[in-house]
Length: 152
Image (cartoon, rainbow, N blue to C red; front, side, top):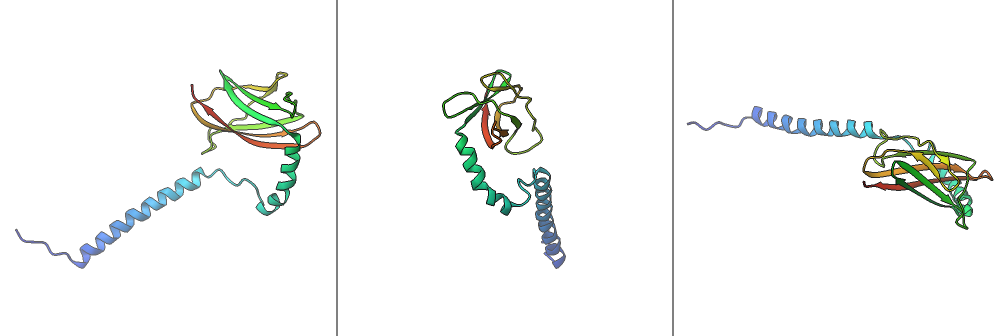
């Protein structure tokens, strides 16, 4: 049987095929990254950084302790003041979702039961983030991201 000779044509086909695979995989990964990017956190990071310390000091002066947990099929958001008493807010907006993507995000319909804020919620196992924005009775804004781990 005669040995085949490698010609310039064979080398060219090999290079084109190898780089074609590399470029194809990079394109698939780039498209996937762009599709799953949730967006920007703030419009102007410089302006946000200028206000950060002031907002943090106001928030810390409230002395609130915040926890979230799933009790059965109810999400319980507990907010207590410096003395351990429940805090009733003048405003609350929250989004519950996975830390890695936004397709499972949902807004719990919290109601205050005298001790904590509760909302009906059915969650799958895994890690969740509760991103809350609350307003104290004196108008102070309070923002926090609470980690929630669900294991049934």
